[in-house]
Image (cartoon, rainbow, N blue to C red):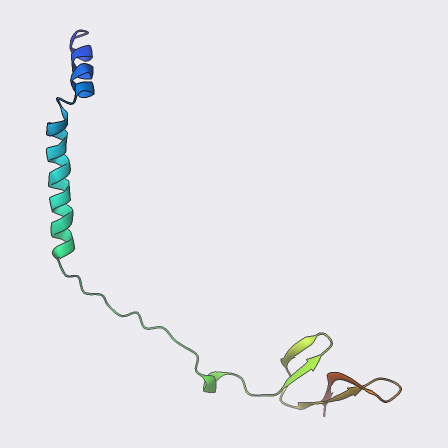
Length: 95
């Protein structure tokens, strides 16, 4: 048994056993090529897309904290400094 191990290692190193393994690789390649030739049906995945009509209605106000939607009962107005000059931001006025 010990004499067979070096003989197998020598045969692998010299390439004598590679034709046996290449037949296995060739058969595997043929199976893969045959599988690629088959046609599989792809089903469409239907996803819900929000349309522009589905977005919440309302106005947007830009304050020093950032811009965002304001409640329906409120409206944006111009914000002023205490001396009366406009700040460039909106103020939200609610009823």
